[in-house]
Length: 320
Image 1: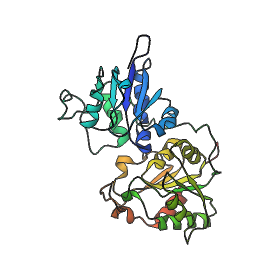
Image 2 (image 1 turned 90 degrees about the horizontal axis):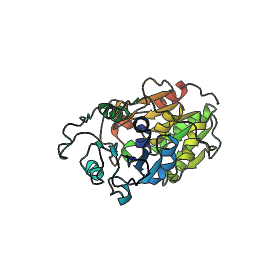
Image 3 (image 1 turned 60 degrees about the vertical axis):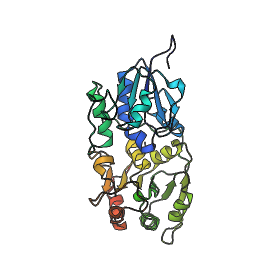
Image 4 (image 1 turned 135 degrees about the horizontal axis):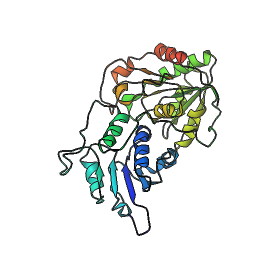
């Protein structure tokens, strides 16, 4: 992957979704600081490339899907960093590139990794990767999550608005649309503008919330594969309400007050930092399958009144 005269390469694997990229930002920045003379390449879905570059920690993006083989041009990095998982598949994927060094967690099925750091199942996703790097002598600060505002305007006017995002990557983390519609109605009754946001393929869900029988018409924004317009929307908004999904991590990164609904996964593993008082998490203490095909019972125990109260308790965001 390096030819004479070129900088050596650090290849980082994190071929997952939006929230996964954002929770890895402290680790990506730590790698960038530790290898200032290297070319920092992130293997991640190509659609996330604009946001990856916006972190300031990535020189180039190598488009990659989860555990898909990487191109021959990626062979021979001086350092390979596995921020994707604990292996063995992700380890083997990186080892097949013949890196000079692998930074990863130990996995009993991958010979030669026995002395590497140990995976902990009960660890917050941000701290997990920071701790792994610290075990290799790389200083990593898990609080280093913040992003600058995107250098583009919001796709629709959203100053002071409540952004409601009803979608999520699995049905287990999707609070019912009719409940979001009632929240939208209550926010409008409180004098706040409402924007319903959605990812690709979620237009109908967003419109169900925006045009619900108890919700006066709200603006709808449906993003495409590029996450930067959604980031611009969140950066301008007054507050965000969502389940445990990528937009919640955007709100954390951009300092936008938020209410995040948790069900199958506890906030101690994926929630905003507890010392950031501009965020509220709602969770009823149960866990389940985050990839389940129906809303998690714990998530369904969260009521509309709880969400509305949590939104009312958020600090006001001041422009600028």
